[in-house]
Image 1 (cartoon, rainbow, N blue to C red):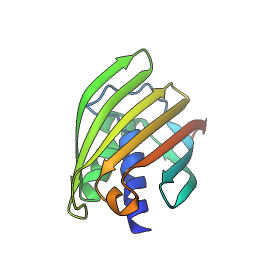
Image 2: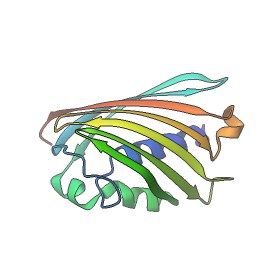
Image 3: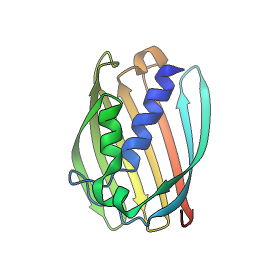
Length: 145
């Protein structure tokens, strides 16, 4: 379960980034609701839902990058493409609790009040979980904080 939590943390961290390395997502501050679904071979589908307050400062400073660092995860981004509000990129992440780098491919759409993301991951701890993991996430702004 610790491996699933680490993978989920990486997805949520990268999915919410607003930092210089990636295009800035045009999202609005406020209370956001997130729904994720992780599919792991042999373990089935694991849903997770939560709400989080996102401030303008969080968006401007890319607060999730520091969350990655606090978790001991370092990600490098490549193959970035932006077409309108669609973002596609690859993240290669390393960390002290990972036996090998995680390589994740992302396809996201983001507006001021909604975000959808699909991610496929190999490496990291995925060998112990069947070799590949797929995750999807949808988020929507509910109100002010």
